[in-house]
Length: 139
Image 1 (spheres, rainbow, N blue to C red):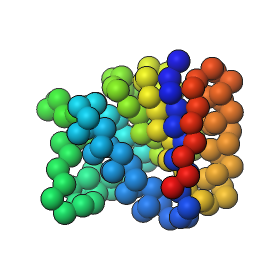
Image 2 (tube, helix red, strand yellow):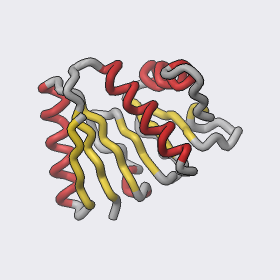
Image 3 (spheres, rainbow, N blue to C red):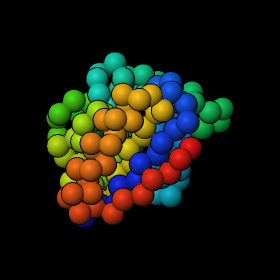
């Protein structure tokens, strides 16, 4: 069973959630983990790809879009296509990705938007019912 951490932001905006995804990916990478960030759409994934280059001055997080062949420790994907298991899955989706079970750790990022929070409650219940270890962090 995976450890699932819900990071609940005080802010409503998606940019804050994207920034948190970048920060978590950088921290995990510096701890020598492999990471997959999963977005809802191609446009979301491409925005994260660009943001990982610019989110903080002096930051370097080696990454690529999923399916690339460089072997980067951070990959970014979207949709329902399966991805290779890594140490950490950072998800920005409304639903649990179908491949989430193959990851030992999952980070769910939630804004304070009521719709986002309502959908996260359903994911929380699903993870809990599957027997995963659950944690919640208010940011």
